[in-house]
Image 1 (cartoon, rainbow, N blue to C red):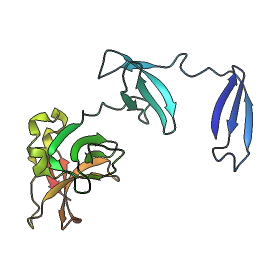
Image 2 (image 1 turned 120 degrees about the horizontal axis):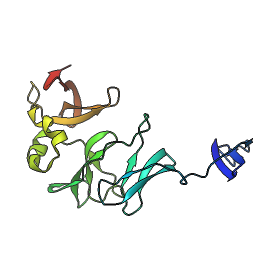
Image 3 (image 1 turned 60 degrees about the vertical axis):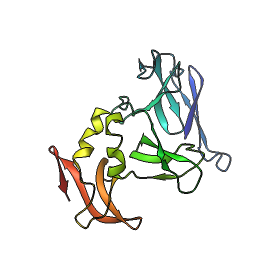
Length: 193
C-alpha cells in the first residue's frame, strides 16, 4: 500500500493496484511531512547537499544542485558513490552506429551504448578491454587487473556480477555464451570456485 499524509494527524494508505483494487486504510496519529527533518549528506559531484527522498524504488538521496543520486542501503546509510562513466569510442556497438561506455550499476560494471537507456544494448566487459583503460579506473577496481585474460581453455575472460554473492567475479565465454568457469577475489588473490 502507498501512504500519503493528509495532514499532521491523518495518513491515507491506498492499494498500489488502484484502480483495480479500491482498498484503503485511514490511519490516525502524528505524522511529519517528508523533507522537513530529512537527513542530508554532502554531494560527491558538486558542493551541494543531498537530501533523503522516496521514489518508486524506495528511499534515495538526491542532490539539490545537480542530478546526482545515491540509493539507500538496508542499513539506512547512503550507498558508496559510483564511478563516473568512461567513454570508449574505440569499442563500437554491434546493433547501432554507436559506441560503448563503461558504467557502474547496481549489478557491478557493464558496457552500455552511449545513448543508454534509449538504446538498450549492454554487455559485460572483457578483462582485456579494461586493461586499455586501467589508468582511468578508480583505485577500488585496480584489483581486477590481477585476473587472467583467458580461462584454462583459452576463452576470453569477462567481468560478471554474482547476484547470489553480490560481488564482481571473472568468468569466461565461448562463442558468446558464458562457460561454467569463474574466479572470485579472495584474500588478495583470484581463486577458482
